[in-house]
Amino acid sequence: MGRQPCCDKVGLKRGPWSIEEDHKLTDFIVNNGIHCWRMVPKLAGLLRCGKSCRLRWINYLRPDVKRGALSEMEENQIIQLHACFGNRWSKIASHFPGRTDNEIKNHWNTKIKKRLKILGLDPVTHKPIEETETNPELDSSIEQEESLEVTSMKDCRHAQCEVQVTIDEKQNEVNKIMVTSNESTDHHDDLLHNYEMLCPSLDVGLGVNQETNTSNSYYSPTFSLENSINPSSMGTQDSIQQWVDSVDSMLSWDGFNQLEDELFFLDNSH
DNA sequence: AATATTTTCAACCGCGGACCA
DNA sequence: ATGGTCCGCGGTTGAAAATAT
Image (cartoon, rainbow, N blue to C red; front, side):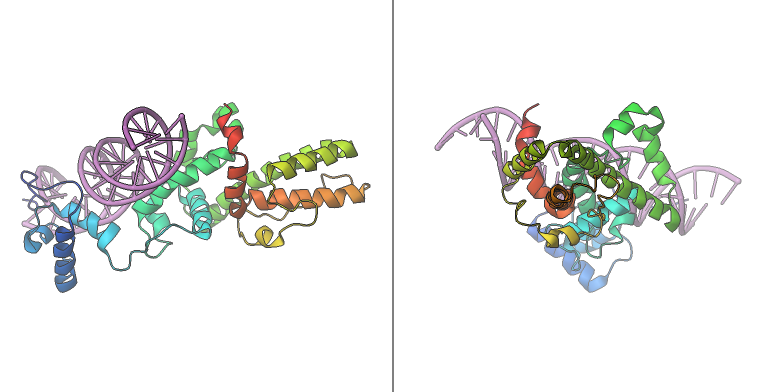
């Protein structure tokens, strides 16, 4: 015969844990350790199944569990790791001591996913949504399956590069707008003015916040105008460089909150 | 202030692999 | 080798909190 059943669900309590239950479970584990989750509720005097106790301990009661919002650095790291491992949350969580897979999964589903969508990126493939939609080869489900096969560090770095390239592509789009605007100084000035109106907190005219431009390790790719801006118009180019630097910092994770705030009305318009 | 809607996140569910008798 | 249980994982749910109307 096999082992005994995990638990008899009849008569067991479900739903949110009370403070008293938390104390019982914590006291028991602190004093006895964990040998068999099936036995924990019986020995601790709890009307819960072992599975529920395990979940409560790992996600909430564990003394080394890290509380509070995830930092921007952590968010960036989650995105990188998601590009490598897909939805393998426990794998991703293992890179964040004190953070639980449940917490990271929730954070991804409620926040990061939305931000990537606003950026025009598919949260599953990490590629531009238009590309995924127009190219059946890049169907999300297929991509997701493929991402599960990515295991080696080489592949991982490759996946990270792909995300990097996607962000670069986004900035190239900004570049194209810049080139178009470069055809007319007036138009260019209008563009800067409009952008300044959109983002009043950015000092477009007097200089750029270089700190935000360098503080992000992943979403602040180095950006060159050499291949996209006509070098003959240096005066204009300086302004454009500043503008693009601003956009660069806005596209970085640091600046995204600001961009999101500034452009919220665009999202509400449809 | 009251109500509706959206967001957040703790907890549950079911599956698959590991393990045991 | 087989059948059964346990554990851990990822997907999903739903109540509570926050925000909008």
